[in-house]
Amino acid sequence: MSIKVAVLKEVGAGEKRVALTPDAAKKLLELGAEVSLVPTSGNQALFFDSDYLAVGAKVDDNYSDADVVIKVLPLSVEEVASIKPGAVTICTGQPAGFVDAIAELAKKGCSVFAMDLLPRISRAQSMDSLSSQASAAGYKAVLLAATRLSKFFPMLMTAAGTIPPAKVLVMGAGVAGLQAIATAKRLGAQVSAYDVRLAVKEEVQSLGAKFVELPLEAVEGQGGYAGDQSAEFQAKQQSLIADTVKVSDVVITTAAIPGRKAPILITKAMVEAMKPGSIVVDLAASTGGNCEITQDGEEVLLGGVTVIGASELPSMISTHASQLYAKNVVNFLTPMIKDGKLEMDLDDEVVSATCVVANGEVRHQPTRELLGL
Ligand SMILES: NC(=O)c1ccc[n+]([C@@H]2O[C@H](COP(=O)([O-])OP(=O)(O)OC[C@H]3O[C@@H](n4cnc5c(N)ncnc54)[C@H](O)[C@@H]3O)[C@@H](O)[C@H]2O)c1
Image (tube, rainbow, N blue to C red; front, side, top):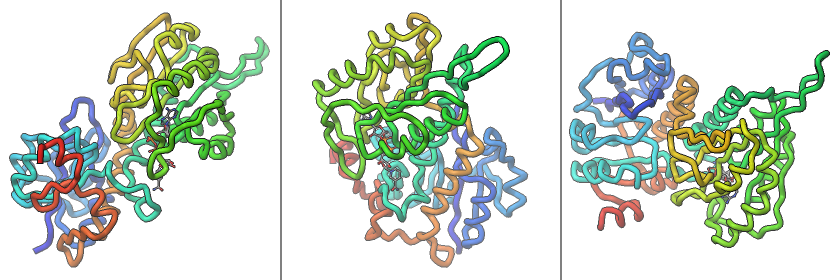
């Protein structure tokens, strides 16, 4: 008997991605798995039921016999109720964001993998959905700002006069920030970037942007991430970056600290000091926001400045974001499929770090604590 992999339909408001594309389904079929998809799951990413049927996948509402269940966003408690005991689930999200569903999955003896917990090591790069979706978000953030700004991005020298380039500031130069810098440069803007990690200075400069260096000593985090800075550091950082924010037409903020609330980089007073018509796109909106007045999923207008709490950007580029996520999932799943059967090697660093629950046992320590175990 080969393993059955089911793709669930995303039910989150506004979510247009799908966890598996027809090409990715084909890869799993070639490994000896059976693949089924809840009808119309791919429609909003422009992958249609007929495309899945054409590669040999099934289209079926019922996933109660699936051994592996794949989604983009976390499973809901209602979805868990329809899942077979002992099944394996794979989705994005920090476990704290779907702890109720995790508790139900554990009760059913299921195994739960959270793609957000994947270690940032070379071997796991092709599985790294945080990176693939952050790239999509960084790209789309700039396009969103460019369409909202009442100015050109590039410098224009016309018979009617010269237009200076738009000034774009990117705060946080991780995966999303670097993609935002590259996109803004391609559109011809004058781009500056800031990050607490000085290690990114060369990457920023190699993209043709100016690195804004502040005389501050930042705390380093683990695994190449930034650390949680003190309140005193944050206040000093805000005052030092204020002048650069003030003259920017567009600010894209992407600063995050894994598992923590996002640091406030832009205060309300800093927004008030910006020129009317300026745009802030806050990619950290879902974890509290980098701007003091950000509302997740909303736009706030203050003194003519628009602050966009952008939490659904990868979904706005649903075809390619789905394609990349599906590749990440297939690359993650492939080493676990042996002769058409699923074997979880919990001694493997990638499998172990990503596994929140193994056959009903909650093994992710922060989740254990949240569940009072
Ligand atoms: N597989 C791999 O090897 C791999 C894959 C992806 C990323 N990475 C690395 O992981 C690290 C984190 O990348 P990410 O994009 O996920 O980061 P992230 O989303 O956690 O944070 C985004 C950026 O915000 C910055 N930041 C945090 N606090 C800040 C503050 N107070 N002020 C200004 N900036 C602040 C961080 O330094 C980071 O560059 C990077 O070093 C990246 O190169 C490695």
